[in-house]
Length: 75
Image 1 (cartoon, rainbow, N blue to C red):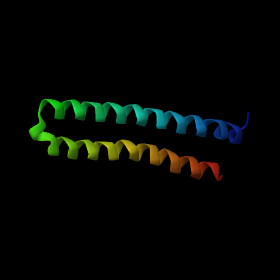
Image 2 (image 1 turned 90 degrees about the horizontal axis):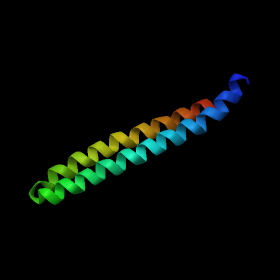
Image 3 (image 1 turned 180 degrees about the vertical axis):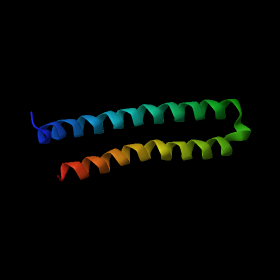
């Protein structure tokens, strides 16, 4: 197996793992936020704002992996 074949096999697997990890992380974050809002409805604005910022960071990881995959797929 040469390096081109290893990259061609590794990129989709890495992208899939990043997407799976991101989905699990987003599910846990949203679940925890909804649970917290259920316990303290008066703090919902603060909880939602923190959840949205956290979700943006989680999604950024997947986008970085996608960009990385496109860069290395072009080589």
